[in-house]
Length: 343
Image 1 (spheres, rainbow, N blue to C red):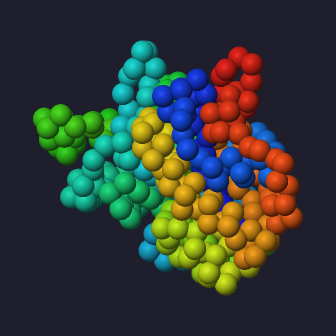
Image 2: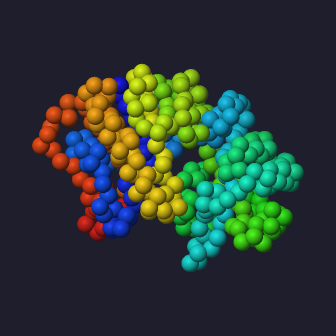
Image 3: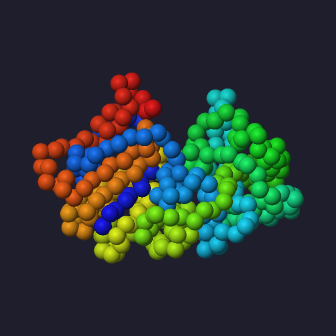
C-alpha cells in the first residue's frame, strides 16, 4: 500500500505559543519526523493540494464539492460556492468569519436563499446544500478569482473581498446591502447573533475529469468526496482510526484528516492539541506499526502557514534506529526561522 495522508494545519501556526505546543505528547509524530524525508514548498490552500492529488488544475471546486454533497453530477452550468459569511470591522480592517464560527440553522438558510433567488433571479440560482454551504449556478460564465474560504476565514483582509475586475464585484455589494436589511438578520441582531451579511464566492471553473489519483478516498469533506466520485472511485467516510484504511485492501488510498483545520481557523488551541493527540495515537501510531507490512510507502502532505510540508517515508527507513525526530514545537520553531515568525 502507498498511503497518502492530507492533513491541513498539522503544525500550529504560532511557534512561540508554548502553552499550546509545550509538553505535547507525540511519539509517533516524532518517529515520523525522524525517519521521513521532509520537503517544504510554497504555501498553498489545502483545497488546491487536494485537487493536485487528482491531477486537476485549480478550478472547478464548486462543481466537485456539490457532487460530494448530494451526488449531483457536474453539468454544463457555471457553478460557484456562495458560502454565507459575517463581515465585521476590527482595528480598521475587515475580518471575515465563515459559518463554522457561528450558528445558522436550516430555516434561516432557506429564508435567505429564497430571498436571494427572488431578488437576483437575473444573476443565477442559489442552492443551500447545508446551512453552512451554499452554491450559485450562474446564468453566464464569469472570470472570478478568489481564494477558497478556508484561506480567508478568521483573517483580517483589505476592503477588496473579491477580484475587482470580476463582473460579480459590484453585484456582491448589492447582495451585502440586501442581506443587511433582511428580516433574518434583524432577528439575529436582536438575539445577539452575528449577521449573515455577505457571501464568499469561489471555486468557479470547469470540472475536469480527475486522473492519476488514488484508488480509494477516506474523507468527510464534500470536496474530497466529490473528486472521488468524479474519478469513479470509492469514497468512504473518515474512520476513527487508521486500521479501517489499512485493512481496506486499497493500494493507493488518500485519507483527508481535516480535524486540525477548524481549530486553527477559529483559534482553538486546546481543540487543536486534542485533535493532534488523536492523530498521533489513532493514525500515525498504527501506521508506524504496520510500516513494511501493510504500508510500503507513506506520504504526509500538510498545507500550513509555514508552507506546504511533505514527509515521505519508505518502509526501509524503519530500520534506521539511530534517528530521532523533533517535537511539533521544535518543527514549528525550525520552520519559522531565527526570527521566530512563520513565513
